[in-house]
Amino acid sequence: RQVWPEAPAEESIPHGAILGLFHVHSHRPAEDCRPGYVWARGPICHIISKAIEFTRPIRCRGSRGLWQLEAWQIAKVDEEAQQATVSHFNIAEATGDKT
Image (cartoon, rainbow, N blue to C red; front, side, top):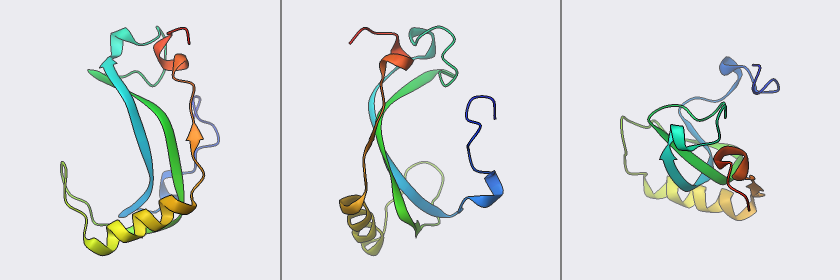
């Protein structure tokens, strides 16, 4: 809560659903991220440069590791992505790199 005070309560968010998409710009060992960066946790820090939140959750059971989506789920993801607004993030906050 200290890092993300406005985060919704766990029990209030949908489970068993795809809620959006994000882009992994790069990844690096956590120790190669900006010192003290709160999201740089262990062994690999994925640098997220943009994300979208879907307006409607897409039902998806999921599984361990990677799994295939069904055709109707892919169509829904594409439909939601076409109408979504992209949020861009300043990756220098995580990397400490000068841009």
